[in-house]
Amino acid sequence: MSTSSVIKLGPPVAEALQSQRPVVALESSLIAHGLPWPANIETAKLAEAAIREEGVVPATIGIVNGRPTLGITEAEMESLAHESGVMKASARDIAVAVAFGKTAATTVAATMLLAYQNGIRVLATGGIGGAHREPAPLWDISADLFEIARLQAAVVCAGAKSILDIPRTLEILESHGVPVLGFRTSDFPGFYLTSTGHPVTARIDEPSQAAAVLRAHWDLHGAGVLVAQPVPCEAALDPNEFGQALTRAEQEVAGKGVRGNELTPYLLARLAEFTQGKSLQSNQALVVANARLAARIAVCLAN
Image 1 (cartoon, rainbow, N blue to C red):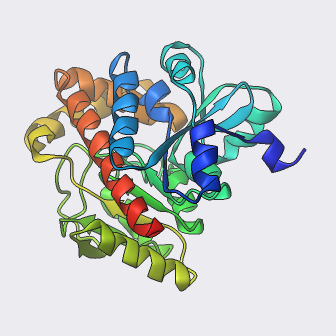
Image 2: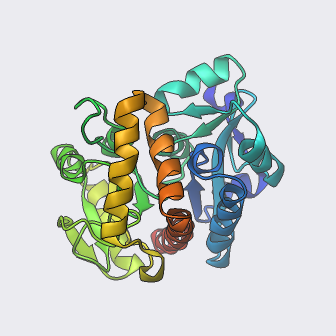
Image 3: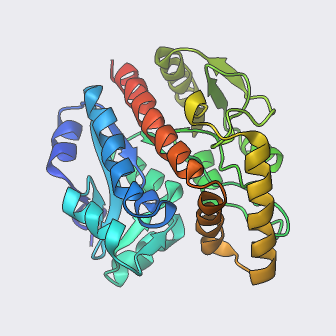
């Protein structure tokens, strides 16, 4: 079976790719595993709407009954948001989901791989995965980092998730030759936090500058590029409040032995509870802002 017969393109996405119009990919793990109902479906719809407002076609990616789909429908989004037992698919899991006819939500790694294979080179997400903090094992590192390191595509995010070991995550990206561009910031953002205190590779102030770096990096046979935009200030969490909430969540994790694919969703859910929902509002705001920025970068690349 050829790759083209396995992949399904939603009609708007197929038409845009055929006519070489800009498309932005969106991951679907946020819908099934990242946010609770109804914030999950609301955020997904708002992100797509922000992309359309910039004249760009959104392609939310998921695996529907064993078929990777670029541009899932609203009904398919609803299924991911509501149904229990939806598989969480990273890059390694795509073939398993296809072979066994599974329905799966795709992580950044899986979304990036499927998007790149089909000519989509800009992806928007909330925050990328990375290296986990102790007490998680030192080798507990997200596949997101390695797909970014090997594929010629851009990931627009609000940095790495604040629950991670940020210095180690940045070191891994540096070791794999991934430029980290700060959009209107010189500090690497921290998902819910506007800054982690760690420097980015370079600051950019306009989408056109991001596009220029992408073209140069790819012309020089580089692979992925991270574009990191801080969460809107009005939606950012107070660092002290976040630190206290994260400490409580990590203490629970240590006691329950949660790890692997379940670790990040568990921590995010507990943070939402400990911050009285503030982290959910922050997550929604940054996802939509990143989708809009990704669309503007995609327009610059197309031009």
